[in-house]
Image (cartoon, rainbow, N blue to C red):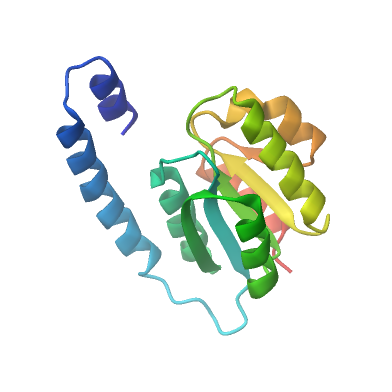
Length: 164
């Protein structure tokens, strides 16, 4: 999908091509997410993209990966305000949140959202962030004790640290 996005950005593909590719891949990844049945006592991970983050494929991949590892998934979708994410964590008694950050890599309002999220949640709730632009926020993520993940192995490791 990175290549598709790059091709759209350079004008090689039209919006319809990018949207079609996204729809096909999203449908496939969503089917993976629902292919697993968590145990009755499985913990829930809340998966979303923060406000302003409109790309959900990374979040879907995170949800499918967590489901394959036995987690119950509360998938919230794109561009969620902090208060809604916090409410979902409380509702599901989730020990962890996974956020996908795709674009841009230098948005001060996103930094503020991350700070508010950390402030509104108990320190015991693990926050995990990954995605194409997440490394651009490495300093604030580290400051807020938010796990920066760069691949599925580091995602699985971060999730395992928050499984009760």
